Amino acid sequence: MSSATPTPSRARRLPVAGVLRLGRPSDIWFKPALSVVVAVAPPSLILVALGRLDLAAYTMAGSLCALYAHNRPYVARARVLAGVVLGMLGGLAAALVAASLTENAVVLVTVGAALAAVQKVLCDATRIGPPAHVILTFVSSASLFVPQTLGQVPGHLALAAAAGAWAWLVGMAPAPVRPHGPERRATAHALNATAAYAETAGDGDGDPRARSAAYAAVQAAWQTLLAAGNRPSATRRALERLVVRAEVALAAPADTDPVRLRARARALRGTGRVPHTEELRTDADELLGAAAERATAPRPLWSRLGPLTPIAVRTGLGCALAGYASLALGVGRPYWALVTAASIYQANITLTWSRAVQRVVGNLVGVLLFAAIAPIAHLGPLALVLCCLVCNFGAEALIGRNYWLGSVCVTPLALLVTEFPGYQPTGDLVTDRVVDTLVGALVGFVAAVAVTNRRAGRRVERALDAVAHARERAARLSADPRSTPAALESARRGLAAALVDLRATADAAAGEWWQRALPQERVVLAEQAAHRTLAATVRRQGLLPDPGTSTHTEDARP
Image (cartoon, rainbow, N blue to C red; front, top):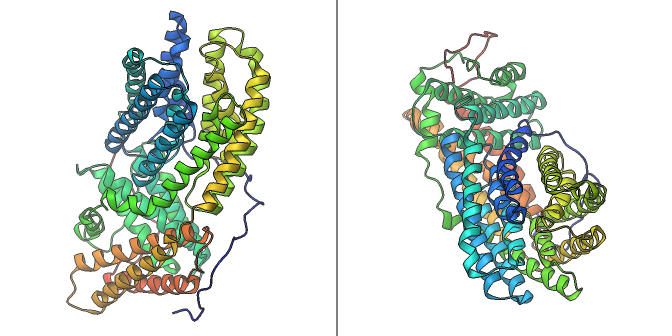
C-alpha cells in the first residue's frame, strides 16, 4: 500500500500540446462516410423533386442514424440501430411538441438542456459510441426552434421515421457480403494491440500504456463476439480461439511472437479463411474462455447510471446556461450554443477541455469553409443538397483523425441545414455561429469545472478492491491442484476484466479536479501484482503461446 497521504488536490494542468494533433484514420472510416451519404441522398433528392426541401430537416434526422453501430456485429447492430432510431424519434417528438406549445425561448432552452442530459447519460450508459448523443441533441435542439403546430407533428415524425427505417437498411446492407466483418476487425485489433505490447515487453513488464490498451482491445473483442449471438459457427469458434491466444500472449509476453500475431491479424482482412491456431489442448478446453465470457452476466443498466450523475448534471446545467447566455446576447439560434456545450462533455475535466478546444478550432475554420461554399449552395435546391452530401462525407472521413478536423465539415453542414426552408444572409449565419460556438464552449466548460465529481476517487478504491479479490481468487485456484480448468479460466477472465476496469477508472479519475490525490502508487502496484498472477495462472493452465511458424488455416469461411 502506498505510504503517500492523500492531500487535497486543486486544478490540474490542462493539455495544450497535442490537442489538435492528427492521428491515424479508423480502419473503416469509409463505412460511416458512405453510409450517411447513401442514407441522406434518396430522401433529400425526393423532396427536391417534390419541391418540399423545407421538410428535409426531418428526413435528415432519421438519415443521420446511419452513422451509428458500424463496429457492432450485425445481430447486435440491428437492435442498436433500431434503438437509435427510436431514441431519435423520442427526442424529436418531445422537441416538436414543446415547440408547438410555446414560443418562450427560455422554456425551449430548458427543455433542450434536459433532453441533452438524458441523451448523454443514456448513450454513455449503453456505450452507443460515436457519434453518441451529439447527433440526437443536435436534432432535438434544432427542432425546438422550428415553428410548429400540434397538427404538423405526426407528419414530421412520419418523415423522420421513414428516413430512419431507410438508414437501418443502409446500416444492415453489408451483412450478406461480409457477415462476420465486425467480429473479424475486433479480433484483428486485439491481436495487433497484443503484438504492440509484446514488442515492448522484452524481459520486463513492457510499456504500461501499451499493456492497458491491449487488455482493453481484448476485452472489446470478447464483447463483440458475445454480441454476435449464440449461434455456433466455425468462424466464430476460430475467432474465439484467436482472442484466447491474444489473452495468453498478454499474460506471457516474453513467450510471444509479435510477428505471428500481426500475421494472423492481417489474415483476418477480407473474407478469407480464419487463421488456424495450433493448440496445446483440445478444442473444448480451449474454448473454456468463450464459455467463461458467456457465463458473465452483464451489469444492469441502473448500476451504470449512478456513476454518470455528475456528467448528467454538468450537461444539463452547462447546456441551459449556454442557451441562456446566447439569448442574453441576442443571438437568434441559441440551440447552437446548447449543442456546442453538449458536445464537449467527456469522461473528465481534462478530456472536456481538450474537446472544447477542438470544437472551437473546428467550428471557426468551418464557418470560413461555409462562407466559401455558400455561393455554390445558393445556386438551387439540388446544389444545396449536394453540398450537404459532400459535407456529410467529409465529416465522417476526417473526424477519426481528430475531432476538430471533422468539425470543419460538420459546421458548414449544420449551417446548410438551416437553409432548407430558404436561403439566409451568409454574414448573419457566420456571425451567429461564431458567437454561439465561443459562448457554448466557454459556459459549458465553466459548468463542468463547477460541478465536481468527487465520486471518481471512491470508484478507484472500489476498483482496487475488485482487483485484489479477483487476484486472490485466481492465486488460490492456481495453487490448488484440484482446481478444474473451468474454474481457473473463470478466475483468470475475472481478473483480466477487473484490470481493464481499474485502468479505465483510474484514467477517468486522473483528469478530474477538486478531489483528493489519487492512490496512483497503489494502482500501479495492484496492476503489476495482477499481471504476475495472470502469468502464473496461464502457466498453471498450460496456455502458453503456440510455437512454430505454421501458416495453415482453418477451414472456417465467413
